[in-house]
Image (cartoon, rainbow, N blue to C red):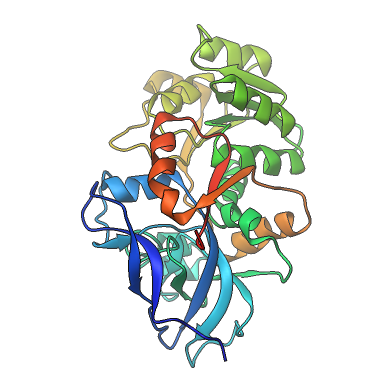
Length: 349
């Protein structure tokens, strides 16, 4: 038997943008189809910042425990759970649950389920020591895995891997990544290289230029110092990238990517800046015959594939580990755009 405490440490906020309080809360009991995970580490995603601010057109649960990149150990399970045993390693993803019976679920598009449960948004997430997840959607993690390093794969890794597949880009072709030096971008570079792609990174700052180069990006374009980003991207890719993955959290990169993407290329929207729009001049959109599409996390199959790359040592998120209680400081750095790689929270601190 696992000794499960009645209370635990968590970071909670009562209202959108309200104080982030590190305090004791009760440990939940899993339902028939749920597992209780003793979260050891949780990555911090830009989505978590939006959930706290409440600036998306989707209401959050309040009060809320955020977080959706939680990696830990199964310590309790419901009587209908058959895919996990106590002691197994498991991950909490953005998609906590779906109905599994609607059109979207039946087609394998579980994230688009109208009844989806979202970790750290519509249900409490991984910024706590013990978190609930629907067993069917929790991510199985191989024994012996470094839980701190795997945590960012559970959202950032799955999301960018799915986006690359959605783009249709082929080995040997150019892929541009906006916001390339952040948590999603650094993983996107690695997945892209594994898939045989040539990468141009768009971001700003010497630290991100160095990091993206180390991860395999052939070119770094600093958007803060480059006078004409569109012309420069077209120049270095000899006609424009065949696809663009926008993980940036600002509106302007999306617009620019529609201008520099190669004719018949694909612009993929992944980042979710609040109150933003994708603007593409209609004449050029038609004449160049470009495709603009959204890519929203991934399904269970994509999760398995993305985690397999990690398990084989082919991708690794550059991380910095801090205590759970330091989440407010991480948000401050995130708002300033000063994070290269990913912050991961140790729930024991």
